[in-house]
Length: 95
Image (cartoon, rainbow, N blue to C red):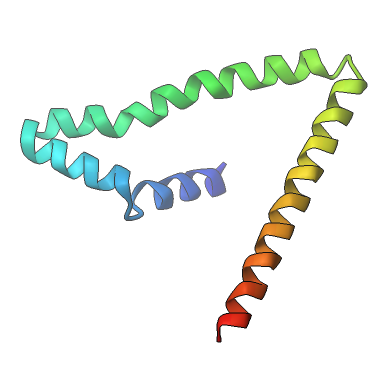
């Protein structure tokens, strides 16, 4: 629980587009506007966190679906590996 809180706080104060948006909205519309923008990801993520256990519980009854997802994920990882290595070889050829 403590690790999750620390991870959330560190991600919340990290520099990035969301922090820039929160600051700009706070400067434009005051503290209330900044808080609304800062809480938007929390509200939108609650739906995802709430639906995911339901979907995973339904999918666990089927042995085929997790296998297909695993295979698709492995193909995605292999494709990313190929792209990374081909980009790396192009960079080494340019030097």
